[in-house]
Length: 270
Image (cartoon, rainbow, N blue to C red; front, side, top):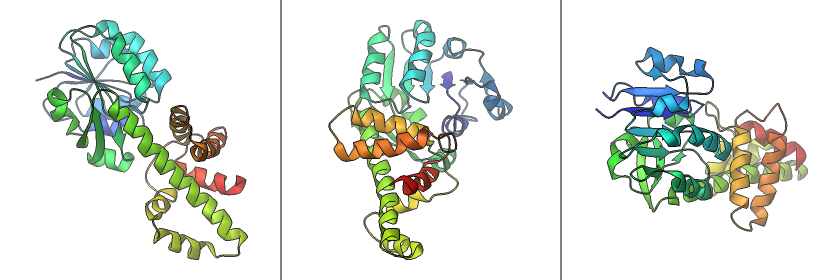
C-alpha cells in the first residue's frame, strides 16, 4: 500500500488526517505542536519528529497548513527529500502564485496537485468536504475521495485560485450580514426580525454562517485569505471586507476564534 504523510494537524488537518486511518495505507503525521497528533497516534498513525522525516519514503504527501509562510517553511524542509514518483497534494489556502512557485522548486518526477477544501471542521470530521483539485489528480483521486467530493478545476493552480474566489465571497457575505444588522439597529428594527428576514433572502447562507456554532474558521486565517484575494485584483468592496477581518484578527480576543465571533466585532465598528 502507498505510504502517506500528512503534515499540518490544525482544526482542519487533524480531522482530515483521521479520514486516512484504517484505510490500509501506512500513515505518518507531523505537526509543529506534536501533542495535537496524539489522537492519531492512538489510532495507528506514526509521528514524525520533523517534516523531512515525515515525507521520507512517502508515496503521497498531503499538506494542510496555515498559509504561504508556513508552506514555504515546510517546503524548505521536505523538497530535498521528495523523490521521483512522489505526489504532493497541497490543500492549504495559499493562492495560485504560491502553488506555482512551489511547483518550480520540485525535482523532475515529483507531481504537485493543488486541492484546497470547501467546508469547515464539521464537514472535515464527516469526510464531506468539497475538494477543488487542480493539476494531474488521477493518481491521487482515491486519497482525495477520503476527504469528500472532488471537483476538477483545471490546470495546476486553478484549485487554489477558485478557493480564493469562494472564500472571498463567503467572507464578503458574512461581513455584509453584520453591517445589515447595524443598519437594522439604526433604523429601530428588532434583531430577531431582521435576522429572520435576511435568512429568507438571497443572503440566507451567509446569515447561517455568520451565526454558526460548532464549526471553526479562524478569524486570522480569514484575514489572510482576504489579503490574498485583494492582492490578486482591484476589489474595492472586498478591500473593505478585508479591513473588517484584519481589525478583528488584530484583536487577541477574536484572532483565533471562529469568524462568527468576528461578526460581533464588525457590528461594533461599522
